[in-house]
Image 1: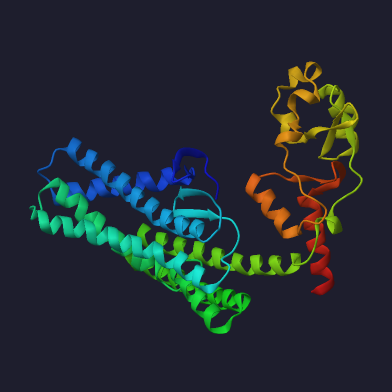
Image 2 (image 1 turned 180 degrees about the vertical axis):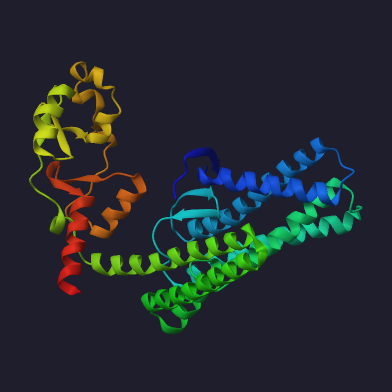
Length: 372
């Protein structure tokens, strides 16, 4: 879940939006506008629209604060946080690595619902202290925000992994058993059961006249079911890559090309002829950078005869690389973090080979065939 639109940084953590966010934002605005107009017909339409947009923005600020609390606890516990992405079903903190112990897992999960409860009570408490009338626009906005934040906290406390409640359940089982893998399996199974309940409830609601609301509940259940299932995949992946080093999987037959070669000749005589997707660019007898089809596609085809590989390559100084002794799991995390498909393997300043997602996938496929 990557951000397509960057909004900036908060406490050094990048904040962004996924394209799906716009869909739910529009639905919330239209829904709020309809509710506000129905409950307050005396309000002017322009006021209704302004309040609906403002309430939706404040709601997403609440979601951001919820996710930010997760991220700050994770960072305080020594876990780097890449970014926070808001999307159709809320938000997600992209935290690198796993919690090192059950206590860290518990507080990382618990602080999110706690933040939502505090926000909800603060909104409702402010409305009560102000003693505003129901017809007051500000009272209407903050009353809605108060109840929706309390509802958000309640939903996230459901024991369905990977919801916060499911992660809390995982932390408790982990604390009791001392086995992270077992706690993950059990929490994921409970998560799948909760997701199945959502799907069943949504179907019943839909055929009972609930309309789109029932479909929305079923969709949330489907999303949770997929997320819980992926935890099994991640658990198996972690086991499969345990103790495996980059040198065990990388390819040592890595072609190199001269940086002065133009793109047209490179494509005709190297890329298309060999079908390889990663080439080391050399200049003056040393490694200058890396070039893949990704860099080539960014250049207009009419310019290929006039642009050299030196002009488009990923320079060595910015090129991400690993050593042969790096754990394969760490290399895969680096690929995901940087959104790259190949990693040069460099030892003592010289190129030993290249690690690609294809090699990792081939290793996993072979392992699965033999151990199935």
